[in-house]
Length: 129
Image 1 (cartoon, one colour):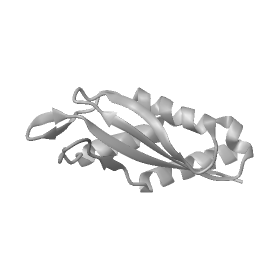
Image 2 (cartoon, helix red, strand yellow):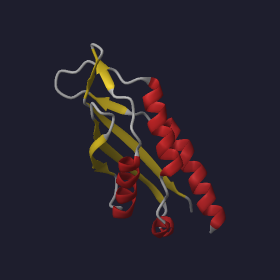
Image 3 (spheres, rainbow, N blue to C red):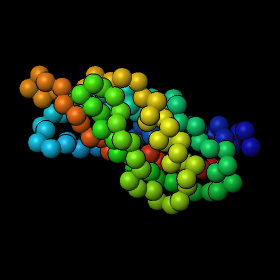
Image 4 (cartoon, rainbow, N blue to C red):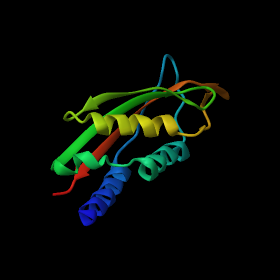
C-alpha cells in the first residue's frame, strides 16, 4: 500500500506542475501575475497537499478547481472550491486547508499600486490502482 501511496504522490506532483493557474482579474484590473508568484503557488501546493488516506480505496482521478482572492496585503481571502469532477469532501477540505496556509505573497500591482487579484487554480489528483 505504501508503494501505491508513494506512486500516487509522485503522479500527483507531476500532474500538478503540468496544470495551468488561471488568474481572473477582479473589477477593472489589468495587472498580470508574475511567473514567480504562479510558480510559488504551484510549489507550495505540491509540497503541502496530502492526499487523504481514506480515498486510496477509490480508483481513478479527481479534478478540483479553487478560486481565491490575493489581497492588496498579499493574503489569501475567500478560498472556495468552484468545481469538482466527483464528490470528495476530504479532497476539497485538504485543498482549502493548503490554500489557507499560503504565506504572504507579494501582491499584484497595477500602475505600481497593489490591487486585489482573483486566482483560479486547478488540481488533478490521480489515485493509483
